[in-house]
Length: 430
Image 1 (cartoon, rainbow, N blue to C red):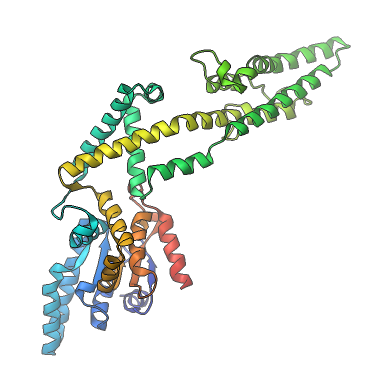
Image 2: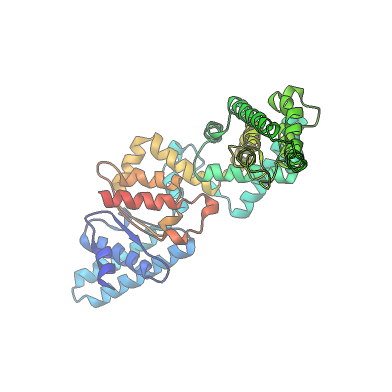
């Protein structure tokens, strides 16, 4: 091992964060640190938790540790030391060297009454989960449509039924992966959406801008034939936009006056196609540039079209959230009927167990005094909350993490590279 690797493996009096990529020997460092903890006498095997993010990696780490224990026993000439390493090797089969999900499973099965679960619960595999979540999403959509929800029917028309079901499943999985309630997501989303007041204010600004552009156009001289042609050319570029705006601004402002089947978004999309190009008389260029930014097809979320989409989102978001919530209820009932939990349940229930039952958390903290976490860049906020129970506050466990922000592969599970960066900052500040 290099001096840096040895220092990482043997520095046990503080938390350590190691940034390392593939082929850097990080698994070797993890194994050596595990052995160093045992050799120091700070903890025994039952007090160490080694977290990997695949079962294969956990098996590999366990096997490497086992081989090193055999080597330690063979190298020692002291019979007592040999006996200690042999005892440790036998106990290794019960060591917590596993994925975060397996660790959560252990916590839950050690405290089934507090967790409120069947101690014999099964864990759904990925295929079983996908079948059950799809059934739940399909059922939620069907229930809404059968119940006469016009907005749900509009969502189906916009997304297609399959597209809506897929969207519901994605949002449901994402929300559970980061451990955030659907209602909280809705509240946070609504806070970021434009209001009707924002939209009306933007309309007033565009209306004033159009009036100013028309006044400027009217001021162009037309005393000569050339001036008259230039003015007519400028009018030919500006008036299609201004005429459409003046004809429809009332309906855009007050949606109750819209013709049936026509939306603000439709009118504004058509308006964006009529924004004049900047190849116009230079006196009008500032107005045209501003209008393009507010009404053009490429305008950002602060443009009229973006604001109108925000308002439509405000209308359908509660309906969409209701579909996700209903899907979750159906899915939960499905799992309860077969006494099963999925991977996200394991984490959500473990976090709840540790946060709602201080005695359970206290016993777990006394038992697990050292944590080694591999591939920490693939840790999400939910998993971070579980680890925080053990590594923060009085009597906190020793934490050793290895990760590479450039190698995150579990974004689909809600993994957040920011969790790694935050942990690194905290360890450095300590």
